[in-house]
Image (cartoon, rainbow, N blue to C red; front, side):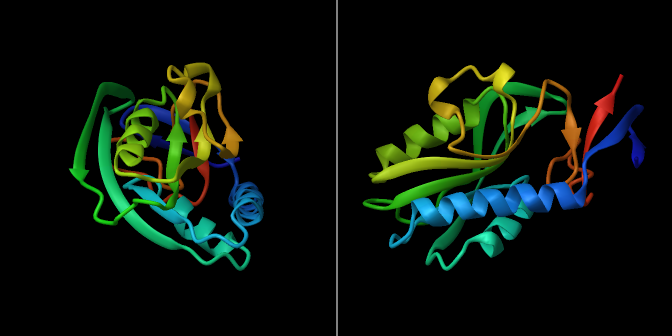
Length: 180
């Protein structure tokens, strides 16, 4: 088992690259089946979801789709600030479109809750969520539960595969959990 140390914390490998690839493939198959014959718009939440999104796009089976990016922030260090800040707003028209938000992790659901309301307000026909990780025990907004989940995680802080710790560690090929 691989491990790393960063900023005084010890992290141990939790999901290997092979496990991640299997999870992404499964999510890609589900989305491809659900959106067969449609042309969904994937709204990829930067910065964290870019790694998952790139792999997910390649895992889609014959699905014609578009991608766009949005950048929001609600975290500092290991904790949420409780406020969603739009850093790079949506540039794509979503009116009358089926939209799939791609996120790295959903925990409290604040980001997804606010993004779904925002996209519906812009006239999206439907809004679903694909997230690599989901923390069901932390969810505070019922409408924020992802429709497509790579893997569930408990309350531990995780890094790697797009998930960061103060901007670092997104480039790790596995996902690591903090060990106390």
